[in-house]
Image 1 (cartoon, one colour):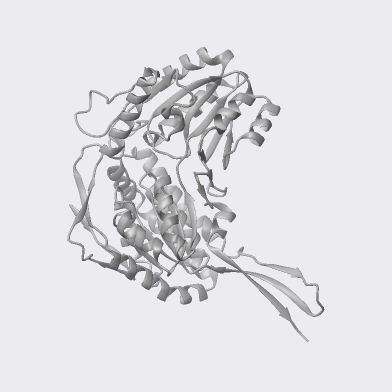
Image 2: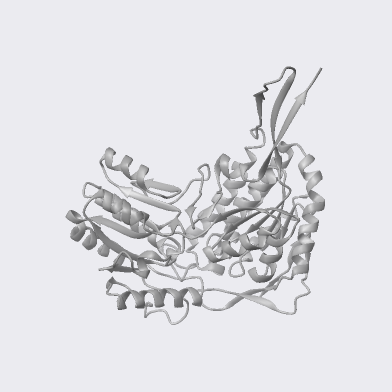
Length: 479
């Protein structure tokens, strides 16, 4: 069994904490590894190391910083199978999807390295003679990244790659549920001669490590991917120092299926979007609104498609569609929500329980619910599991209004062959992202950002990279 240490200032160091966190395989409930429970001292040491390293790192030409990001991509590809297996074991992600996450993470480092020669400022005309106004883009300083357990490796890269290419140094707090892949990466990057202190990893719980990183005056920006509750705690901790925050939080994504939709396409997209990583993805479809005229046919075909979803051990089920949930807490939460939905009048067409053939692990069947009210818990609150309520609508305006009736605003989708309907939905849906005739999943060159309680700021593409930059304005008068 492996034991992981903290990675601070270019070295692995043992925390002074007296307790350890056990990392379980969710499919077997066996202990995979342990890691020291990080302390406030660990967090502060990492921040001090990052602060000390930042001026020299920022002084490097961006193209030289990019070379280190390319090395990170290379070392990921060289160890892609090992990293995918590590990821699959620690969080029950089916091995094919785990391999995709590892490969896309490598691509993400290369993509951000490509911004080295494209970070640009502006020159603005002055109202005065012999004066120029310059807008410079400069690094913020020390970036803190707080990572989730559902896509821990990719989201780590989202925060690290953008912060490093822009001249910031970085402290990452992996999730206590799934830190193993990130800590293996820390071991690999130790071999690429990255300057000490530029990138640090501190594990521990949010109450201690997360709060210390968020509340420190050293921290220049905090990027968190997690729950609404976690985002609120980060905002509160950051308030005293007015620290910039970039938050990707929960979602309750609607999918609107119009009567003129390509039903094969819509059903395939909705099912794949709902069961990917056992439904534990914040931007994937959490509720479906189907036009009255095709409702019965759609539900029948959706039920058949969902019943064909395969569930296996994440590592050995090579062709499985989904696997276990990440933890017992997650299993208990989803079980309670489905049982409450039934009490509120929902009808379970499929699933609604643990699969009987698994005697261990946190498995839950793909679940389809009908007869759900718009104001019910299962329609309003994020489930984060393979559970899908299906509701009926009569007009597109009604579907848009029902879709917008939520405190979240991350992603949405519409399925239609009518251009006018699609454009009306695009204009009317109050979400950071809208997908048209496809599953919910973003691109690394786009901009992944939520509205309302789904977050502030964003990630990916040019605009995600610019989250890590200050704008400095210079009024240059000459004679």
